[in-house]
Every structure is written in structure tokens, then in C-alpha cells.
Image (tube, rainbow, N blue to C red):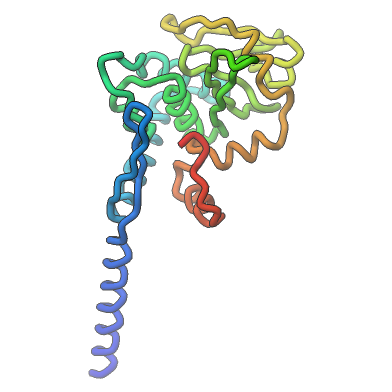
Amino acid sequence: MKKNAFRAAIILAVSAAAILALNVPVTTRQGVDFQIREIRIPLYLKALDFMDRYYNYGTLADRITSGEKSGFGKAVALLKWTKENIRENPGSLPVVDDHAWHIIIRGYGLDDQCQDVFTTLCNREGLAAFFVKVRLPDKGRARCFSLVHLGGGWTVFDAYKGIYFINSEGKPAILKEIENGDWKAVKASPESGSEDYPGFMKQLTSSDDPVNTATWKDSRAAIQSPLRRLFHWLKGDKRQAYGE
């Protein structure tokens, strides 16, 4: 009888501790017209929202890439879908930035938000990807580009314009080939836009530097899975994910 009472007490204590822990207030960040604010929500709600997005990313990415066998084929399919489904942010509506899934639901976004959606879906399909901002010399115009690791190295995609880059052999051009001028811009969709790329390509990293891999591991797109988010949190440096 005493053993049963003791076990019941332990179960109640653990349950109470779990309830208290799950109700600990945490923060999530949201940007509206480039003004960032922190919103306090209970831990259990943040965890539930995270898992909801995780499974939605997976379901969507699988549907988009259905029938594609190669990593390159999957990346191009995701690029095409992003270009055709994430429209230019209407000038009459606020610029809202919080999670890639919300951008997908709204169906519109800016340059970096299109890259965010594309790279997040790539990572969900097992393709290492993140995006970077590239600025022309002398504080010139800036654009964002997505880097996806395919086969021999990091390759370049422009999810905002719906463009990918191939080498003279028709394969995805890696950064070293782009540095050497062996690249060609290809439209993924009839809706793909155009851009004067040579200047931007010169500013991209000239080789597959290990820094790119380190940046990818800390990118927002890469930590949208439970294990990667846990490893990121366990680092203990409290840094925000790249791109947030």
C-alpha cells in the first residue's frame, strides 16, 4: 500500500514538474515592416508550432519533388514551385517575417523570404542549403542567393527570380566553376525573371570553403528539424540562427 502511494506521489510530482516546465514563458520573434518584436508564448505552444511546421514542410516538399530521383532534380522542382507560388510582396501590404511556413501560407514575400522558403524545403528533402546576401562593390545593390550542396560542391540558385546555374556540361555549376566563368543562367519556370548576374557572381565565394558548411549548420533553414534545433540549442552560445 505504501509502495503504491509512493509511486502515485512520484507520478504526481513528475507530472506537476512537466506541466510547470511546459508553461515556462519563452519568446518568438516577428518582423513587421522591418521592425522586430519579441512575442512571449508558453514553451508547449512553441514546441507544438515547431513540430506542426516541421511536418508541413516535409509533406509539401515530398509532394513537390514526387518522381524526382536526383538531388539536382529535386532542387530544380523546389525552385520552380517557389517561384510560381511565392509572389512579390504587394506594396499595399506589410512586410511580415517570422517563419518560412507563414510565408508559404501568405503566398508572397521579398527576395530573402523566397530564398528562405526554398532553402528550408531543400533541407527538409535532405539537401544542405542556406542563403546569403551578396552586395555589389562600393555599397551597390544587394541580392540574396541560395547555396545548395549537390555532388561536387555548393551550387547557386536564385529562388526570387526562379533561376539556377549550370556549367558547360549542363551540370549544376559549383562555386569554383562560377569563379572561373563556367556558368550559364537557366530559367526554371516560364514565370522566371531576369537579372544582370555577372557582377553578383564575382562577389560569391570563389571556392568551396569550409566556412560555407559551418554557416549552413547554423542557418535558419538547416535547423527546422527537431534534432538539428536541439544540437543548435545545446551549443549554448545563444546565437540567433543565420537568416533570423
